Length: 238
Image 1 (cartoon, helix red, strand yellow):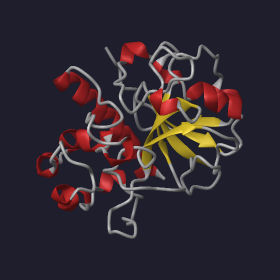
Image 2 (cartoon, helix red, strand yellow; image 1 turned 180 degrees about the vertical axis):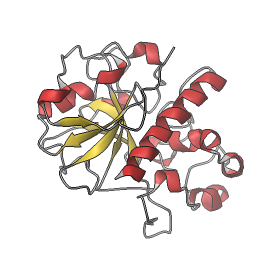
Image 3 (cartoon, helix red, strand yellow; image 1 turned 120 degrees about the vertical axis):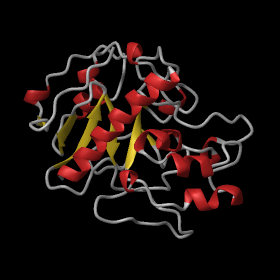
Image 4 (tube, one colour; image 1 turned 90 degrees about the vertical axis):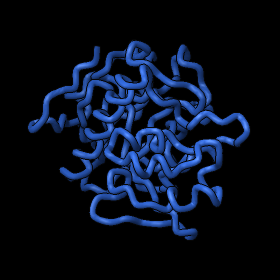
């Protein structure tokens, strides 16, 4: 469990490094109007330079699809930070599967929503969120989650790397949220903390956590969410 928790924290650190050096956070897919969402490179590809994988990043042709022959070698590479702790699982074509997704708010159209929608989440296919866009409070906004169902290649845009909450139950439900841990799974929050989410969490509370400006009050202590930061301190965002 600790290894997965550490990886989510590493995601948060990488996002802040990217924001600092590029003056912005990554959109949910690498921008490419010539490609369908599902064929674009994922936001995790854009993160590679900030998780000490610059050489792998340089192998990608950012103008091509994630499964284009020119990107086959790079997309087939194992990146432990993105995979299930302790093992790397692959799909039928040999691409390594990711274990973490960016959260895209509520509804099947969540990844397409503008940032001012009350259902919008932190990630969207063609939108890059700024920390200042999170009006619900950074500690009340989940941005990364473990997934245990329908895992897809980490290099692929679309559902493999971005999920919204579409249908209850959310815990081990149709959206695939979960982590194979007893009692729940881990999520990363915009303030840098990781939290262990109870499998019995109130769906309404989870919906509140998945949005950046829904305006819903959240009381984590009363809903079975346990802060797992006894070994860490929150990441402070400017």
